[in-house]
Length: 196
Image 1 (tube, rainbow, N blue to C red):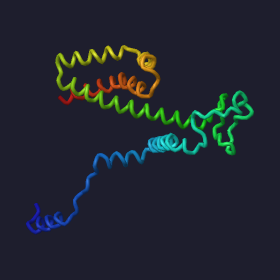
Image 2: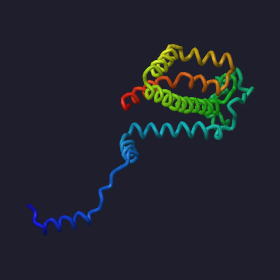
Image 3: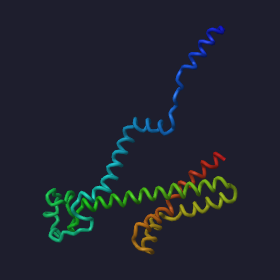
Image 4: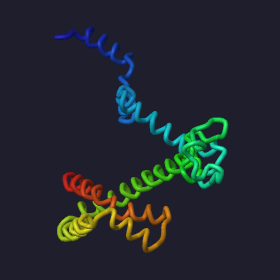
């Protein structure tokens, strides 16, 4: 057993010790992320893609829809990549700059990916949480609606929307948003049921 003198000395030592600092979830995730080389390489590539998408068009002297009529039909000889002419990736058969068109395509692809993901997360989380929380008959009906929508071919809906309402990015976002949230709704519903 410890004597009162030992207990007093121990209490004084404990009082002067610094508190142990714990790590937050964000700090722990940041440390684990920085140790994973593949994740860091993926982040670097993603930053490069975003930079290319939004800065790349300013580096090209041509717009994505500019047509060089002197190259049209003779792209094999005249449309090769050239730093002096400003065709960094060359041109296609119609004399359009491939660098500017690639930058524009990258930007549109990133828009579609980010906006589609945001729609899927927001709508799917809300729908799945409501279905899981209410449960019973409401849950069954809501999940049957999800099953019916999952049976509809994704590409068919996109093509149908673009044909009916014209080609536009907003219709593409709407089409992706109509069906991309279904998987997220099922996952969130399952998690809500386990926590309920």
